[in-house]
Length: 358
Image (cartoon, rainbow, N blue to C red):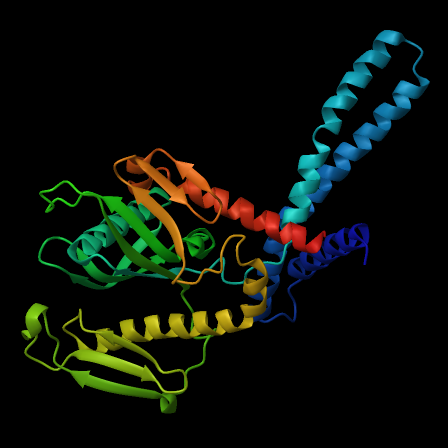
């Protein structure tokens, strides 16, 4: 199918959906929701196609005027207007192509963000806490809701592990490129010799799966109940409220003990388990595509070093796209994180466009 034929088919489908929704007789509520979503998804590209066609039609009219007009001044005015319109064409065509890129179905989902201190001891835990605050502030800037599912803190203000749910518009689409190893280079506060240390923290961003996305049979789960423990192994609850859920087919294990209620701990653990299973299934399905794109925006593998935060130089470097910003403070405050994320999204789109237009 040619590009023009594909665009025409999209417009026709958009019209069909609009007509179907205006005459809803015989449609179930599920049908209406499904058709409304498809209509909303198609609306941006149809509007862009309409804008492109409008500009193209105006250029054709001006070409005709230039060819037939005898007044030199009128031809000059028409020529200037035509040139201005012609400059809009490449950007509009690019927007149409971006709309045609294969959509990641998970992009519109909320996200489960898992953050763990890596190599570097207490300094790594302090860095993990810095990243945790960065993502909290970034979420606030975008008006997203952050729900803490689990945290394991150190005595010096660091974080060994944190799991949070972040909900809002296009959360996973913007955060998915954060998965990987984040490295920090700085002089620790506890270091008397003033030597620069290198530490790391690992970030995993998973699309939060709904029950409709992942069906989990009770027979596939082993659920263990135990007494929650705090630092050093001391009991923090007097009841057996902590929950460990093992998904037998995949071997994925999730533990939750932050709540005093066994029921709440189980509900939180199931949210994380569902996200991890969904992420594993997506990874298996995308393995071939990820291999083809490795070295472009990276595989998204959590073992991959993606970014370095260098405190002495005040810089942040993203190694996947060779981007360096000398605004470390603003990145860690969440203000400038979008500059990195937008660059990663643009690079990803360029890679996908190259794949469909070799």
